[in-house]
Amino acid sequence: MAQRRMFSLSVVDTDAFLELPSSSQALYFHLGMRADDDGFVASPKKITTMTNCSVDDLKLLAEKKFIIPFQTGVCVIRDWKQNNLVQKDRYHRTKYLAEMQSLTLDETGSYVLLDTECIQNVSKLETEVRLGKVRLGKEDTFLSEPASGVPDEERKKTRKKKSFDHEHKAYKLAEWLDAKIAERLPDCKRNTEEKLQKWALTFDRMNRCDGYDYGAMFNILEWSQRNSFWQSNILSPDKFRKQFIQLSAKMKLEEAQNG
Image 1: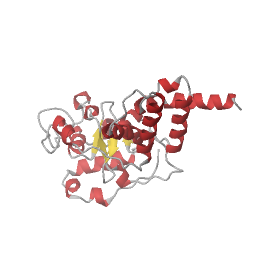
Image 2: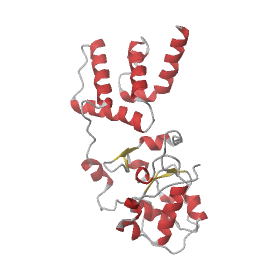
Image 3: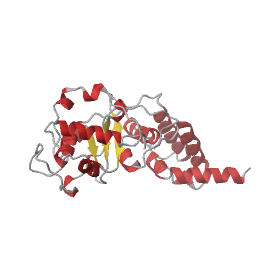
Image 4: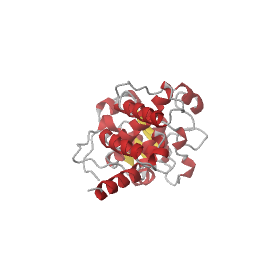
């Protein structure tokens, strides 16, 4: 674990943060100090207890969207990338890849959930540490209702979808795969622009969340479409993402066998 972490004034000097109780502010700093290089905290409940804060402090940080909790018990610092810039030679990717895949970045570089079902239910938390801090309502959940008062389902409908320029590498990969499948299966219907955008989003997540280089992704994707077995199995980016490690290993083995 890194010994040094940074906190940006653009986050901690805002009214939203300064209006938090001092115990909630302290907990935010403690969570930030113990986060991995992608901002994930393995044991927020343990840290809350250890620092003499309460579960209400943890819930308040989630309510005010300073952290995002998950059903697995981990949480992520929402504004991590505003606070910290980890050098590439020192960066270690998080081990919480499933949680990372449920996140995207907004225009400010803050984490945003793609799937609100990943949010943790606080009823699973032990509440042995309660110091009479701010109470957050009747339901014992981190985010039983968004701060805006808009239900999750409505928020999903109104959330702006990410759109990729046709020159974006993720979109080019989606377009290439679509053309390759159409070339091999001319009777298949070509993808619409909306579908290509969804495909591009998957390739984008593979780059941002999984850490795969676009060049490596294209090489393996191109190999899969030449392989007689895999070309009939890899018919979408989702399938490609799921089988990526296996595809990479198979390609390297074939290259080794062919000298």
